[in-house]
Picture 1 (cartoon, rainbow, N blue to C red):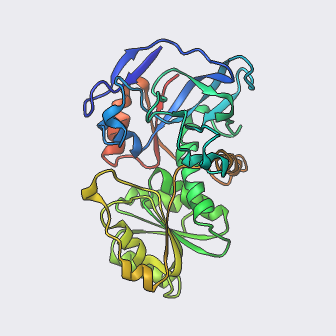
Picture 2 (cartoon, rainbow, N blue to C red; picture 1 turned 120 degrees about the vertical axis):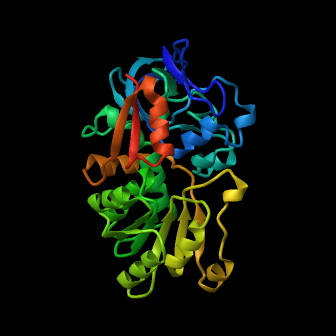
Picture 3 (tube, rainbow, N blue to C red; picture 1 turned 45 degrees about the vertical axis):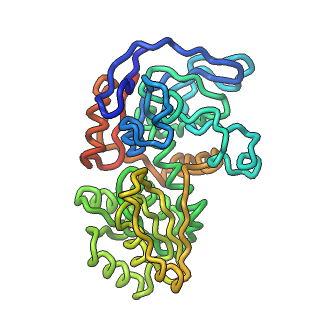
Length: 344
């Protein structure tokens, strides 16, 4: 089968001919149709992840996978031809985190698709049968991949960690692939939502998917959010940036007693954002990290998509052979929403 692989960190991906996988017991074989690209993929191909020094190369990146089941392993549950998305954390189901219902924090992952195990920039992938979820009928498989990471991450951040309630006000820093899903989920929750970004095309996209308004990043955005909330500030800020001054910006937007949920992250110590501790302590502000989603989160989020309340935002699609162009579009901030690598 064809695959685009990392042969050397920092170098362009190369086309490779890899053996076709066979589904093992309780696995299904997925023919990959589309694979979304997010900034975590940039970290993987650059060798900037904590596991990068020990990751065997060549490596197949890509974790936002949609496709169809084409074969079943022994004892596997599933239907041939079923359209699915892949939950890219394959939990051990036995560690303390898994048993506590926090499989997104599994300490013994059996697979971390596209990160430390092979991903979606290839034509087929064998997947545990309980790590595929049905793709909503109103979404094409070409567009389904971002409904795993972008959608699942946003849902867990807004609903699971941020506990956003109807009538509250939220702000999202960064209106990219995850941020545009945050906007839609916040609206579906009955909250008011504002978006802040440095790119005009992303601000317009945020308005199109339901933001009450969207502002260029800077002090003026803080003033506009405070004016819209009667001077109080937002109940929830979702920071999809996680670099440089993003936490200081979040602290300037949040109300006393509010919640900041940090989605974006950097692996470079020099890029860590400073934390204004006096604002956090005197304002009794809660700062929460969030990591991907559980399968229950993802199933509930896909339910919003099936009901037409949330949709993927796709800004481009390239064939597998042009996967480097998809990475460049994300790296250079040319994408509004997600870029998808069309595999099939």
